[in-house]
Length: 155
Ligand SMILES: CC(C)(COP(=O)(O)OP(=O)(O)OC[C@H]1O[C@@H](n2cnc3c(N)ncnc32)[C@H](O)[C@@H]1OP(=O)(O)O)[C@@H](O)C(=O)NCCC(=O)NCCS
Image 1 (cartoon, rainbow, N blue to C red):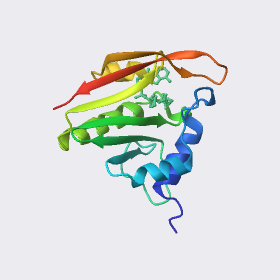
Image 2: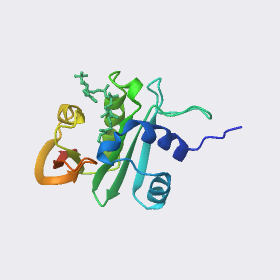
Image 3: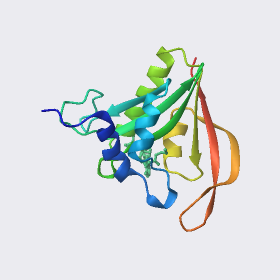
C-alpha cells in the first residue's frame, strides 16, 4: 500500500534539513496550505538522482516554488544532510530552472541568508544579487543576518 504522499516526502526532508537556529523550516500545515494555492509547485528528487519517486520511496530533496505571472520565487530548497555534496541539490535546481523556462517564466527569484553555503550553488547557476535587506533574519540566539535577494533571468 502506498502510505506516503508528497507532503510526507517534503516533510521528511524539511524536518531534518534546516538548522533550527534560523527558523526557516515550514510545518506540515504551511506546506499543505501552500500547495493549494495556484502557482505553487514542488519538485522532488530521490537518492538515486531521479525526479520520479516510487510509491513508498522517500525524497532525498525538494524544491518549492510559487509563480506569479511571468516570475517565480524559489521558496524552499533542501537536501537531506547525509546526501549532500553529491550533486542532488544542483540537479534539483537545474530541474526547477528547466521547468520554469519551459513554462515561459522570465525571472526566477529567491531570498537567502547572507553566507548561506547554498549561495555558491546559486551563483554557479548564474543568480546575481539584486538587493540586500540588512538584519532581516533574526536567529534563535538573537543574531541579525542580512537577507540577499537574488535573481536569474531565464527567458
Ligand atoms: C543547499 C542544499 C540544498 C545543497 O544541496 P547539495 O545536494 O549538497 O548540493 P550539491 O551537492 O549539488 O552541491 C552544489 C555545490 O554547492 C556547495 N554546497 C552546497 N551546500 C553546501 C553546504 N551546506 N556546505 C558547503 N558547500 C555546499 C557544494 O560545495 C557544491 O559545490 P561544488 O560541487 O563546487 O563542490 C543543501 O546544502 C541544503 O539542504 N542546505 C540546507 C537548507 C538550505 O539552506 N537551503 C537553501 C535555502 S532555502
